[in-house]
Length: 476
Length: 95
Image (cartoon, rainbow over all chains, first blue to last red; front, top):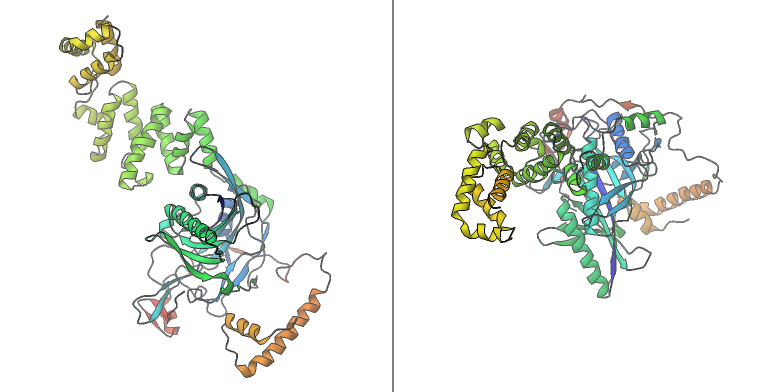
């Protein structure tokens, strides 16, 4: 039996303002418990909220970046529920009039095809505090530092049809948010969290099946695995004659399965109503235009420019624009070395390989863009071969010396002196009479072997193009 | 629309209120009266009226993104029934 999967994602992003959404408390990460929880944040009676203008600006910035309708009049509502890490007894959020309305994201899938996924809305809301359940003699410990920090909840349309698309959407969202500099969006640290709504239906049907919601998944890989596992569960359930019930589930990575958290039927009725302590937030076209004018070049535009301006492949350009810092690094290398293709190869292969191996971010790269550009310049002016350049690259990791100093100190300079190369070539021809004979009889590919012998003899320092040319000349 | 007692119990649970059996009947009558009033309001034709989020015709003022609060943990935790290691302690809650 053929099934179709329907997925909708709710992504919470922690906005990187200095102060909280409605109070002047710091949002600095890692502070001692409750040292950033003011009288407003702990909900003492008589305290009132005042909206942070930067949180609003960041939400609008996201909205214009994804081409969304911007709510010129947004309204905050109270979502009521009882939990000790929510001292007011309600979360302030936006129900009917969010700041960001309908927009969309275009993602590139593994096979190179593109898909546009609708964003239903993105609304501003406040975060809750943290509950710690251990080591307090049967009590729970509450830290309210995080309570009241600004979040942007981004809700997708149920237009995602596979785990692969879900991950591509999340990664694209992550990249855009990082480009916009509105959040660190680090899933492992909770500054980007994802809830996944999954349902399945018979292929060809149009009405949606009953969905389940998998809460708080904290890595791209787990999103993918959780979807696979939940789809499998729903299929088996239905094929065995059962029914999916609408409920919240949790993904257990160790056992690769989802388990029920609570059923929505008995879940809270949130009793939403407009927040009487806050007035409607009104912005005008001028405000939106000003935010738009300050947008950086976004990943799609950058990718298009890289393929046009530097003649890079779609794939290379895609890798290089995956973070703003990586793109900036590449552009410095490309401009200073004057060879975009070599720059793209070195950044996306050698450098990225090195960074991944050590789990470093591009901003932590031990090799600066200017140094890498110098290395490429030395390949281009034939001071060193591409192969020797790899040795220099390795050495640059260990030593703070410049490219030229390393080449000099290690005697890596390429041999371009035709006299020396002639000596190498003569020696190789003398030592390999069989291969020389084969070449003369028309077996062209033997040249590769002979060039290799010359390179070995020179310890990689001979200029391979010159060797090739001279070998052919001598064997005519 | 009339409420029955079980619905009142559910509402009381959501609001974390304890309503005794003897009170339940009166509460049920009063909530039913309120709902009747809402029914009456619902019958008014409001098609041409813009929804209103707030009765005042003013808009929200915004605050500059600056840290203006200081750490007052010690004073604030004196108000709490129980605290330890800087955390507020509450009866155990688990989902």
